[in-house]
Length: 362
Length: 179
Image (cartoon, rainbow over all chains, first blue to last red; front, side, top):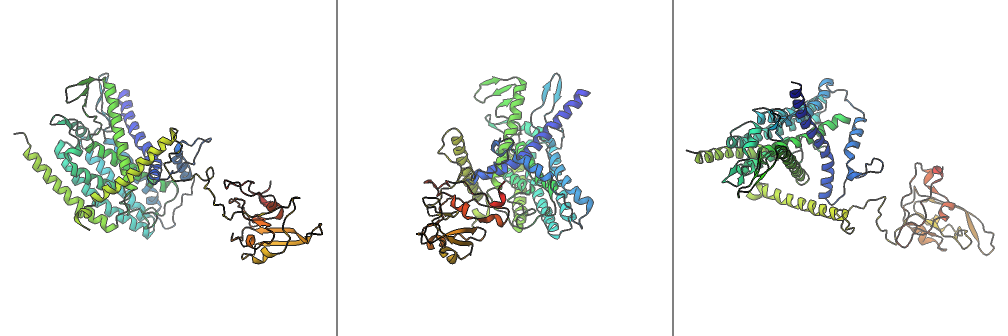
């Protein structure tokens, strides 16, 4: 009983720490990666006792700065909702990662420990529900600020979110059809199968169109460039103009956490989740017949490491997009969502259905 | 826009290729630099307080008063620089020089650097080559307007910049910042 509780706690803490630390680290990654892409050096001045560590202390300095700033609330703001909005934003971004598996079931002394924070048989829907709920925080922030620009920003966020969510929902139906499950753990497990005996059946190979659509809509749901019409802090004024201090920081953090969630979701659905090619529970089984037996713990570590690597690579890619593309205008984003992503997702569903029908074992 | 461009995807991928290429090229150079290849630079940034850009030899930097062999100013207080100064930032009080062969000497020679526009006219106008702007000192700042006024003693103590363009004398500390 106590052990079960401890294991459950450990799983939750692991996922929580993973997402939170990665989210915090992303402020550093964002600065450094953009700097290196643009032939610059990037933030490197924050130091503790002369130790700089490539600017790794800057997230810490940011946190201290934001926590010690004045927490300003406009006179005409809705007191309760204004305070609640950033928490809603961060909370849903944080819990969304819960059902993404980071490893196969671990067998330790007769116990089965599923390596995900929460075992849900509707994991896919749960993640998208949480991601969609995050927009309530944004809308609340826009409305409760008592500022018309913030309200407009919140409305842009809502419109963008709806057009993106529909495309996300429609684009993954193909994945669900192929793997026949809504449970992220079984989707990840199904991606370990081999196509024609040698290609891992990852989602990116079975559903390439859905991958592009999902990634595009996923970036839109993180509200970052190129889909940052809700924010656009430097020129078009977004929903959090009236926020200062750590509340502002929480909105920024929610974006980073959503980036982590989208990266995790892409990994789980399209990049094989925790799968390492040709690695099964007993070790490596290569298609040319060679085998390499590994103890279960090593296999699990390899799987977790593979998952983390994939998420990090995905985050790198999302950051690359964020620092490459210019912002879509509002109407362009709407057009892309409703007239581009959504019809293509429907077409992908039909196409997937036809292919599944044609290749169905008689 | 043609169809391929309206699909965004190809253009997006070419853009990503460009930025990713920069990223990996610069990352490689950074790694080579940290592994000992000192000539490999992954960024064009100059890390300012530690690293400095080379200064052009004709750059107009902080003024200095040229000294005679005995250390007294070469200036004869002819007021040419004060007259030509478009910003009117030079203030000279003339005095009798002890040597009868030299007409005058400034008892005060103040430059208000808060007003100075660094046009270099004072250097051009000077008949005695007594004022120059070749110290290479660029970082003089103060917390007050009074601190921007540099006196004769401070200006006399300055040396010309070295051959590499670096300042040879320390930045004079304004009167209101002296401990």
